[in-house]
Image 1 (cartoon, helix red, strand yellow):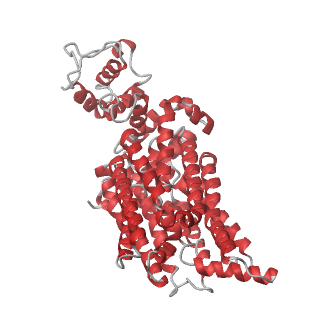
Image 2 (cartoon, rainbow, N blue to C red):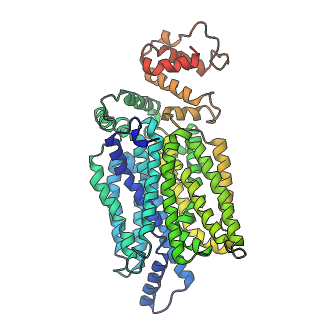
Image 3 (cartoon, rainbow, N blue to C red):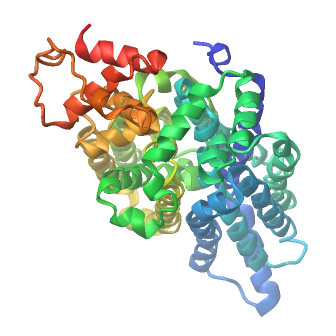
Length: 554
């Protein structure tokens, strides 16, 4: 499947996505950049402390300071992610991304000049600010891409978020080896190179359009939304997109300015919110950030030399990029839920293998290689599903009104879990030693069961169809066919205000039941929707006739 030959993927849409995902490349780069120069940074901290106070800093204190440098990035991410919805509503998706680059440039410069100023506090502040930048990116970028992508490409293009993360991760790992910038002199520049994605996005993004959904639904600027769609679709035929947005707007008018507290208290939206939160936890509490932040020391503890451990870390980045490329066409072919189950299941199996290899590595020499293979396989299955799907599905589970608030909550949870893993893993590693990955195995089993029981498939469904799933119970059993229900709901929304009252009562005279052999209850919402779809045939044949024909069996 050639992604670039898919219907609807125009040059300008590709350009807009490329410009936007530089924010996720920034996130990936700053997640992985702190890993390789761990020894150099710890040496710098010892040196600064001795020059200030005339005494050596204990190894435990050095490790604690380094853990703070790692995890303060996640504290900034929490603040940025929590603010994402407010920024998106006030400045727009594109406008928010542009303003966010000011933070990216500021944080990168602070880290770059850490050694010149002989201050590890500047490193902490820089990591915090770049964390705020990345937190905003993780909220704004998936939101922007999900709103500009055509329905048939939303899954594959959403995976490009994760591809950008993995490219940034790999880039930071390659540049972090001693042959490049992983030296006592080079590591400040290594951290400061985070300025590049921010500058590049400032150059590329201004000519991209704002999200058409934001323009039409939030700002009520219909003509600007049409112009944006024409540019993105490279066509004047944008009425179907406009119609879908109008239907979504009518369905969500009561929630147009929904706050996070209103979202949490809404019975209708509680189920998708819980799913969005648990999906974010399934990404962070899987143990993957323990690998990203501390893979060099993990590989060293498994028996590899320091140099081999750094090259094995590069292997993690390369595998992430390769597997994410593989998952792009699978996302809209196999489905989000299925890939997530495969990913969590594979990670669970190899987390057990990691524990086994750690336990017997001292008895059998080649077990260190099993440990490396298990860690790399763990990363492979992360890239298959949990790497990209939680970001994508959170944006898909909510329509325009509650989406910014939902993204803020989900991203806050994601970064909070990120922080806990980042600051807690060294202590957990010291306490549990060879059993370090067992808690992650337990979490992975819980998340697999939850996904199997509760998470619906969102592949090729409009936002209205997905919302219909939760209005009528669990996504796997709701109203016989949730996508069909959502299609008819769209028909009802589109027809609102157009159908005469007597026409709404039209029923096919000889129809005794649906195409599944179930008799109609003339007092149910099913019959009302059936009637509306039937009535819609003459007004919207291109959208309503196929729905009516399928449901009635005619």
